[in-house]
Image 1 (cartoon, each protein chain N blue to C red):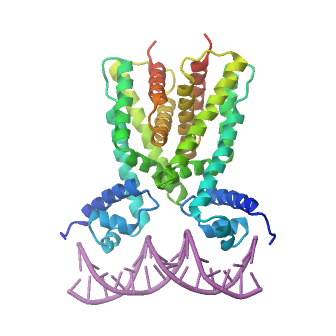
Image 2 (tube, each protein chain N blue to C red):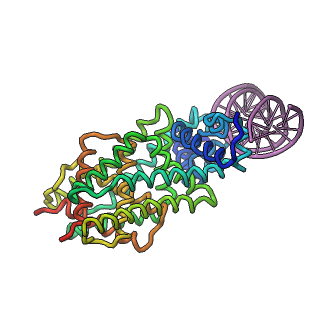
Image 3 (cartoon, protein in one colour):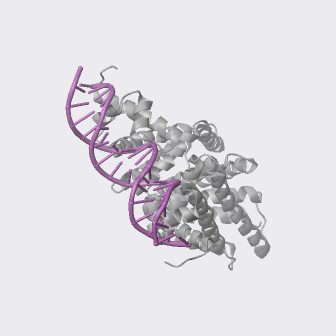
Length: 198
Length: 198
DNA sequence: GTCTATAGGAAGATAGAC
DNA sequence: GTCTATCTTCCTATAGAC
């Protein structure tokens, strides 16, 4: 087995942990299974991380970064406001559909962090980053399309983050049926109304 | 220790499990801690339930029933539509504020069920019941206030359930700050708009 | 029906050879 | 840096006396 700098090993182990946790769930993912997924022995794990908790901290910050990127890339300015909002949600939900386990994992990690004493700040940070991602998107749309908002930006950002979160979890549990497309239409129309210039 | 019918013992153990899981989280709640919480010995547990999974199944169906009751009781017809919607959300979120751990538990149980082979139907049933609760509420409001809906009932019900879910989780993680009250105002206005007669 | 005692296994973490 | 082997702890589940 190659000898790598420990920063690189940590990265490898973190990515392996994300794959294992997305596949098996957080509680069932053991240090052994993570080491196996990364193709290293258990001792390498404990050489790179002091504890399982330290690894999970790394997993949470890493996956939150991934997720925020998805949201940020989903919404890009298009011809009309409706089109922009609709295409943005569509792109985001296409990602959820393609990687349901990874999105599921973000919820599990939130709950792990909230239950683990001393980790609560990681859960808060996760949700603050979601809201910040929306804040950036809104500002971006405001500049490119000259919107007049009906509600303050922080309120809208937090509301959109919560709505995205709820619809995502709902999809992960129930999947899509006829009512699902309707939900997306409803939220699209609502968001367009909230940010419409008038 | 008194000798009770096993149905009653099962109920006691289920309630004890809900308390223990709300306090410690699902993965940390052991059969031992549940038995201790119920004030019985470990063997009594295995006398009433074949396995921990069987108990968790009982926990999920029980707590979903509790939760649905909360949603159903939250919204009662009041003078105006806005008042009804606002007071309903307020009552619901007052319950969340008063029992955050119990609501947190509903999310943990959903994920437990989705990860446990053969338990997926319990998670689906949980979310179907949420939507059904909203369906009943909408029908009730329609009759008492003569509403004309802008979207079909199943779509609206699922959308409201997802939104409630997202806002609840968002509150459980971030708590309330200035933006929180704004989110509630926004959702209230939106819902009132969706069901307004016009 | 209820108890004590224990089987049997899997987890996180460590020791020490190479 | 990486490995095998092991320590310690805690879990679910069962056996069998009362």
